[in-house]
Amino acid sequence: MKVLVLGAGIIGISTAWHLAERGHDVVVVDRQKDAALETSFANAAQISVSYCEPWANKHAPAKLAKWMFRNDAPLLFRPQLDWQQWRWGLQFLTQCNDAAFERNVAQLVALGNYSHAALKDVVRSTGIEYQRLTRGIAHYYTDEASFAAAGEAAGIMQRHGVNRRVVDKEELFRIEPAFRSFAHRIVGGTYTPSDESGDARVFTQELAARCAARGVQFLYGRDIERLETAGGEVTAVHIRERETGAVQRLSADEVVVACGSFSAPLLRTVGVDLPIYPGKGYSATFKLKKPGLAPFVSTIDDELKIAMSRLGDELRVAGTIELSGWNLSLDTDLAKARCRMLAQRIEAVLPGVCDTRLPEEGGNPRFWTGLRPSTPTNVPYIGRTKVGKLWVNAGHGTLGWTHGAGSGKAMAELIGGRMPAMNFRFHGIAQPSLELRTA
Image 1 (tube, rainbow, N blue to C red):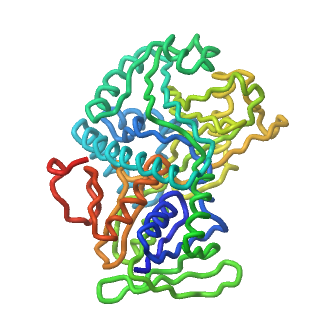
Image 2 (tube, rainbow, N blue to C red):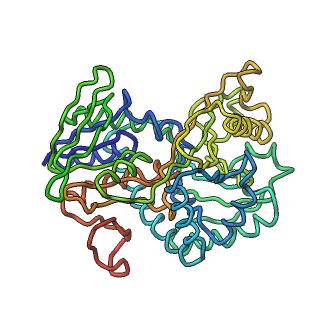
Image 3 (cartoon, rainbow, N blue to C red):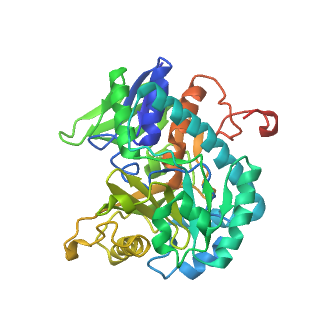
């Protein structure tokens, strides 16, 4: 069958790859000139199956209130005159309890394990190289109270089959010696050996090239004008070429919306209303001045909720989420403060290891921001919409790289009439009880 995939990020390209593998005729549409130039461009680089806790937990409301006026807050909610933001926030509050947290963790771990296996299969079959490091993920703490709570978090993950273990600071430094320079602040950590890291943009663009070699057609530089429907199903997608303004009407047997945060407003035009709201995330990429002293183990800094991953001769640092609308500017005072915070933290943790000088100081860091398509549960929508022939694969938040390969594979299986072998609740799909299904 012919399938249109709208969006060429990690989710859309993975979907296209797995559809093409199953013999479908696939066309990918994206407004950019290449794959992975928006949300998948410069993320934290972590495949973090074991560190996938949703933002919503019993402590979140108090933290959000405390952080509301801090420019460096890990999760910043800035109220806007936007009903979708307020609705999202109210639904987020309903998830801030232990029962919802445990339920959402189970979903995220199930998808993460399935996706990690799918990623490994793709890497084996294609040979794609993307600065991959399979040394696990560490998480360090700088205050005793947070470290004490780490055991409870590790226990929750262990109940779901995740091998996250608590380690003292000396074991943490044996796992990753680079953090000995910050030993005066670190009190302990956790570690999972099964996680990994790598460049999502490089992987996605390489996979897109392999999709093209298999016959997938790419229509880059096209804006999606509208979804055409008739008789309760999608009949065509209207797109406009950015350079010429030419409009084209594309028809297909099935249409997959994988446009990240922009999936929600597009779907609302045909009556599919999903609570996906953009979370503005930041990253900085620094050149290594002392490669021998830089970490190889991808790591999370608990105090600032940032992640750092080595990508060859560079260090990618990413974190903070800003729920404040659709603005992608790096020139606002808030954006500048958050970028400055990333640089200052890395210089404190790894002094002299990276060139953390800001542009005004003669440095050349690559700052970036992207809109994370976030749901109140952090669980993405993967499945069938109420509009016939229209599918959704969006809402992955900060876990798009972690869940990308599996989300694409699952979508291809669903479109082909098969139920993916994982305990995950697919949107709009009648399925057996999760308790009766095998992982």
